[in-house]
Length: 489
Image 1 (tube, rainbow, N blue to C red):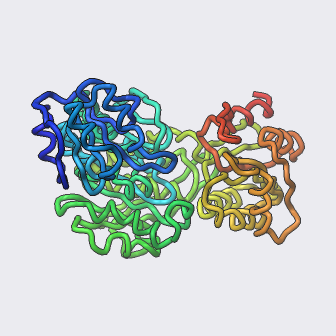
Image 2: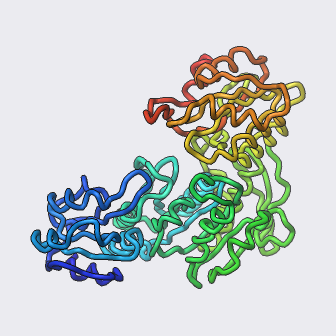
């Protein structure tokens, strides 16, 4: 696609230099990926500013640079190099617009489903993918654990990729015959315009509780970020929301989409009833248009009935037969690190991603409900460094209130002192039923080896993650692998 054509998709404040009639090779925001005839989009990031690397991109052959800082590089450099300088108000918006155009608006060629919320995005996405595949469709997925094009698994570094990576991935999904794409839409991605200009067939809201306040600064800002998905839905799209969440009306209040609710409230469009669960799975009923659909899944907990209910509502509204949707719920495999049960004897270990106060509380409530009389509940957990500090004491209180014994350890301390993080956690604790073992492997080992033979042990916070980040360095670390090692498996 020629540069002259691509620039029609961007509202430029000013264009300086030569706009060459050449085909664009790629659109990049990392100067190291610049190649001959690429467009480099300079973005102001958290750790560095892309405007500092404009000259690098030009030297590697970029034929145009999109930027929002007019003074980043002298104009005569662009003139001398024969490179077009495109000044815009917002580089991230421009990146999304250019990428959408370059990859021929791929989100309009697929049925794209966006899922937002604090907890449940990943599991809901897996339920939706399973249902659509059970109904005979090829499905793409982007999310926290991995990206998929049908059965092909691709690595994932961001819950929601940057706009050019996202459009490229959607383009590949379409070219490989996917009819649907399921996407986790994080609050960061919505604010940072990664989903800008995408066309959604449906949007899903799972729930919202306090999280990421290190980035959003207030709960109101966090809620506003989640709201962006529903505000972007067209009149032809479906908006599916959790009616039992107190913030749901604020999320959907200005959405133009066709709105449908799910939950246990009697006025839900997709009513969840008779929820029962144990360590073998969850059984429940979905009532829709006067008909009852009994459902079961090997995934454990009331929250998974909600996740499955959201998936049922979304897929049925998009045309999947109700009975096929129920079959797809049953076919959904264990989501890595999401209430993943390890252990074949009396002693059970549950590895779970619960890294927010709300998710930890819901997970422990579920454990308390399914633990048999006399089965002690242990919780091994920590909190991430360089992230929202407000949740640390709250999680300390929850862990000690719902557990017989809590073991506070490191999560991903990143560049923070792990003992300072632990002190923040301890500030919320009023009981004396906890210990501190900073080394995470030692904490898991000690708990498994010294707990009673019928203990239920929750290892919370990292779930599917296979690394631990300490002082900015990532090393391989898997809660599941460690647990299996000390369970003797």
